[in-house]
Image (tube, rainbow, N blue to C red; front, side, top):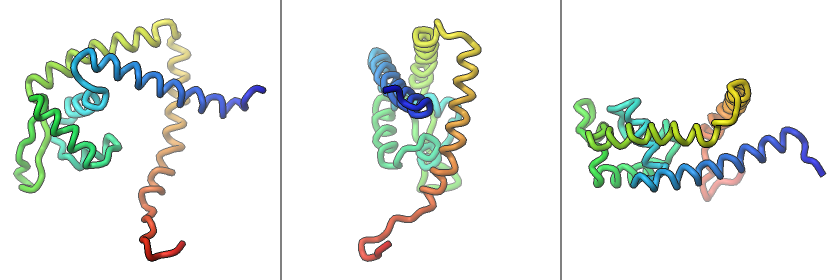
Length: 159
């Protein structure tokens, strides 16, 4: 039995996303990093000087999970935590020269991956897919904002 078109698209998006994450994880490991670390390094290159809270929000990560990632990146000499002159309790995050070289090298890997996975896909199909993904993201954003404003019930309260 054939699935309804929209359900099939959602299934294919989820399955393709899972396969791509696994593929990128493997490629990242070949370069001594993880997909998560790669994401942090790439984000910091675009916006150096962020604090941990802002970076966690942008990457949709729990602050404690990001803190562990940042600890590993700092231990590897890939990022620097610098004091924030405006808030002595917070640190600002910067790439180290080694981290910058790694993320620059990973750009070439990103290009290779894009060619490997999308090389045979025409530009019109890619543009159509980008439009579709953008529309889906726009549907998700308001729902996520609503979820964030909902406070969990405490143990003593009933719904």
